[in-house]
Length: 434
Image 1 (cartoon, rainbow, N blue to C red):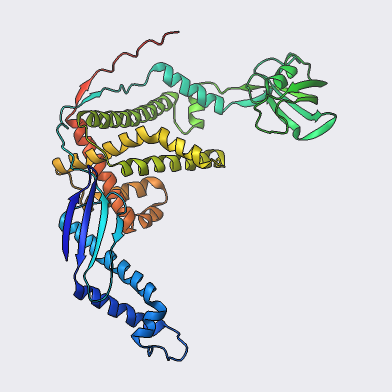
Image 2 (cartoon, rainbow, N blue to C red):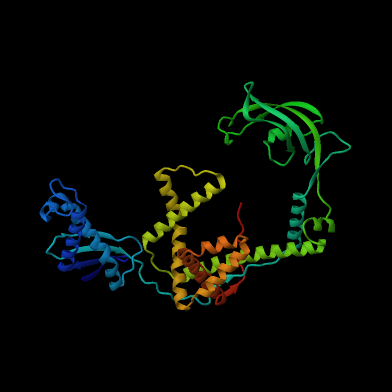
């Protein structure tokens, strides 16, 4: 097999591959033999039709099969021998393929040019503070007290105030017709919480309990239910009970309800949890910072298709997240999808640059992950997951174990980059002009 390589611009190589006649003839003979066994031609038993008849009935199909098989078999070898590494599927320009002749084809291959790693030590990374303030601890305790609050009857008054919860029945009408979703019994309406439309809560505020009320509510133009958007409804309601939240006292009893012996022990646990969360966020921010510094310090040209594919993945991931969060994926036109990809292109290029440079740093620092490292990480995740057998089964698959290896390589490389980085204080934020 003869291979000629020609540069066709920064990102493309043309491989001219010549497959010798002997291999071509062998491929045709094998293809005709397979076709003869499967062919159903009137007047001939299976496998007995002469080659001339097979040529007449299946010649074009056999030729296409031979061309495809020769390309599929020889192109990986040609790229390996010429050290051409494609970043996307090569484009093939086949030439004449016939028995008794060499087969020549040209493969246009997009490549990523070599990357010159000029700097990866001493990169500047901003320090990220990891301290838990008294205010943050207090806010967390208040959040827990709110979550564990109980509803109790209001005593000494019967007029609704902000912060009260009214137990009520209501029914909504538009043009004297009750509408779907506008009726409830025993609804718990917390006044001032913003869980209902402002007109609804303001109509309840100041009323006496028990009582019957009737009031209008205007639905905003952008309301989620299209049949109600921009319309005015009339609600009729019965106020039954007036309640308020009573938060538990901040004492040892409260701590024990949450599984700790004392209030001080609860505070220690919450502080540790808050600190861990901040530490994890700081680590992620530092990793993002060191990748950006690495990209800024090592400019290079990126293969366009790699950026295109990453932008496509970003759009798909965004759609998947919306499906998970909202329960639906918006239907976008081809033009809208293309605009989303264009808008994602800058971030996509930054992501690709970072990934390629990390691979170069991994090679420069001779970072390695062995089977023991992978097995230890699988066991750690299995023990923390609570479904250890499922985790072990998942990473028992070779592709998932390989993905884990890549992640561990990246993690270790980033840790080494941060060890070699120079810590600097965060730059003061610029004041925003009115």
